[in-house]
Amino acid sequence: MSLVGRIQDLCSSKNTTLIGLEREIGLGRGTIRNWDKNSPSVDKVQKVSEYFGVSTDYLLYGFDKSELTSFINLIRYKRSIKEFALDTGLDEFYLNRLCSGVEYTQPSIDSVLKIAVHNENDWLVDAESLFKAAGYDLGEMSDDLLEDIPIELLHHYQKQGMSETEMVIAYARFREAEFKEAMSEPSNTEESSSYEPETIAAHHDGDEWTEEELAEIELFKQFVKTKRKQQE
Image (tube, rainbow, N blue to C red; front, side, top):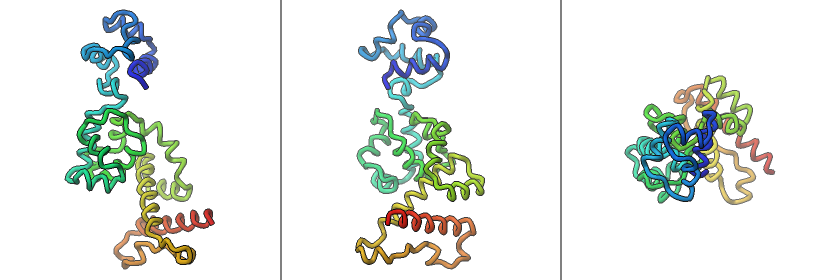
């Protein structure tokens, strides 16, 4: 979406028009409509951002670039860019641009979710704040994201009293574990046909795991088996 398009959306949310906005902040009629062709001055963009209570970054790029950069670096913490790229599965060059604050294109929902999944400092940066800085409303997206969660796993999350956001993050982590499990399976066809996925629980004494952890491991095992049967 263009700069003018974002401003028009903000005008709609406040039941006003571009002309009404221009009148309110002292700009000439038709000024804003030209901004997609001719870049506006910083002070004029600042007037619009102050009127709507949003950042100039949001108006210009569609997301709060500076805030997102700060959040991502807090999440990365002591990890190098290379280590962070390996953890998240994101391209190292792209991740370096995000962490350096020189990426001006809004990151995809999938990229933000991968960063949220590997957030070891969620007490500093929660998922909602991360998505908001990236220009997304996690609350509005939750219903669509929750639709992907298998019903039995969804009920399990609900029994644990998880919020919708926690469910979305938990399922993303679950899918990543599923992917790693699938990647670790033997490539030989004969071996694969008789292969039974081993769980972490098979290598540890049960006393080292809580009942909730064992339940999640068992759910994961059953989920992988079900998907395998559907693909046969």
